[in-house]
Length: 443
Image (cartoon, rainbow, N blue to C red; front, side, top):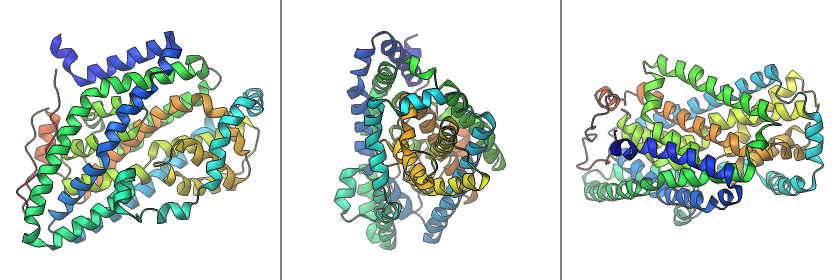
């Protein structure tokens, strides 16, 4: 029994269940637990920038062919664009078939004219009007590297890491001593991460208690159909689209999901996909992907491969059109998908990103009132878990696909991982150091 509760999966599941009970029975206390979840997520964010930097530099510097690095990046971006566009299209089709916004016109009008929700929505609509998508892409180049690390801007840190890794790679033997030092720093960083992850159950408990305490189960009832449609669509996307993609590359979905179950539960409890980012890099390496592929694809995917967010945004827009009785023609819906292809890419590094990106999309279509996003305020938090989980799973699948297509997948390591055995460190031909791999706890 003691070993059973020592398993982190059981600990996080128990914490989530307790969080639901506390939030439902003691809503004020549950709402007050938000700082617990926020502090845990901050601890994770504290490590994201240095871990990405060290992982990417070690991976690229140990790569014999720099052409392969460029090819991996190009393949990843093409894959991201194809799959997220497919996710957007699926969301639009499902929303048209199920019509989740039908029959709640009275609720929609009441919410739109409520003074409290209008004030809460105003901050999102204002920020949406200020968003500039050209600036989003030019922002990838940091004006100050130290500032990029201080703010934890994933794309800026990633760009600098790639350039730094390329430079060290060109140094040849002269870069060996530097890489040995980076290897030891990487080991220390993952040691800190292992300590922080001990607090994962506490973070999951605080996050779930806050969500239930603030919004309550009752908030789900009026928009229950929308939530059901969103969850079912993401379920079908994972077990349909992503499953077929993995099967094409001779991999199986269920063993992969079982391997990352701790990360999925962590995201479920915290509603933040960033909480799983550092561990996903090491997990995908343990699962057979090379260091350079995992280090490049996972961080990039957090901004460009948001499958769950894409599905949610497309369903939400059609839902609002139905709720406010705004008919959208086929050409308008195709235009909507084209706009979402661009706007969804800015959904990662923005606070309240779901609402801001949704509001900016509505502003671009000029068919649905931007203020209509107020209708989603009460249930958005409950759908954020589904978005974040789908994003995390999708990024892992993307990493597997790129690794397989590039011949950067170690089948022996993969089989050991499936058996739950200790995985030997990845051998780098030019380095005497290697990225430490976190051991899983087994009951």
